[in-house]
Image (cartoon, chains in turn purple, blue):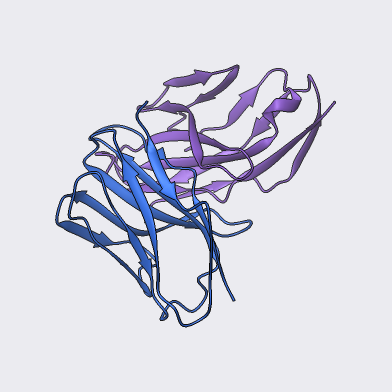
Length: 112
Length: 111
């Protein structure tokens, strides 16, 4: 079945460091891919998405490219801030957005 | 502003009691979902509903029940049959070909 695997955390970085959170997926057909962010005590917020191979999603300095050949959707940011500290979830949906599958989440801690 | 409202934010119950979590949306979304989140784990799907008066079991439906009598409402009942009900519960909604939109969750503690 469809699934998402993302790197375990926590990831601890200093402010202005480069961030990569790895995400790989298994899916039948042509899924859409997402990154969500969760701040403490809150629900998940959509950070970015990509709906087809080679698409690049971007938002608030974060980027991820849909790589069909490596079944990956790694999240990157060139310079993290303390305010980026949160849990990040990689997710996929079936072709008609009918069902969604989430990774286990990666906690990011950014130190000043 | 449109959004999803989950209430209450914190809920405490004694073991053996049923409890209902509320989820209301004013986004006019057709589909609604309930997820369970445990520490260090991803989200697990409990139930989902694509249209009013219809719903399907997700991956961990045992010990839970739902109803979908109105488009904007999708309450979740955690029954006494759920063996480990303490968790963070998230409600979400979507329209066709769009990502999920989440509420802020209800943290349920059963002692």
